[in-house]
Amino acid sequence: MTFSKKTYFHWFEIISRLVTGCVFVFYSQVTVYPQLIVSIGYLLIAVGLGLAIIGSVKHRQFAVWSAQKFKSTFRPAGFGSFLFGGFLIYIITVS
Image 1 (cartoon, one colour):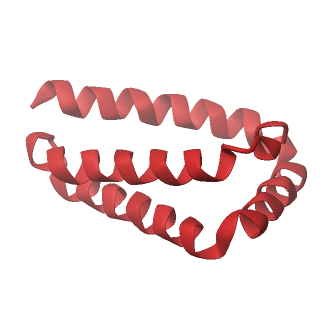
Image 2 (cartoon, rainbow, N blue to C red; image 1 turned 60 degrees about the vertical axis):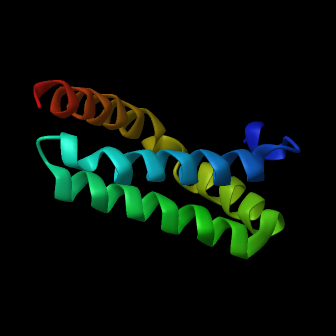
């Protein structure tokens, strides 16, 4: 929740999603699962654009609400994210 109060929070989230999404789309064909990676890329781009449209105030409100509502699921979600990151590294290095 502390990060959501930073002045750069909103734009950092937008830019990081757009850049990551574009990288996924651009490099999807060199992976073992190109359709999955391109789909994730377009999803990230859509979320980045959606965040830009809703604005920083609503984005911050949602960030605080979701951090409070789903506090107990952050550790399992973090572990799942770690596993998914490993999966991404695997499918990129196998091809």
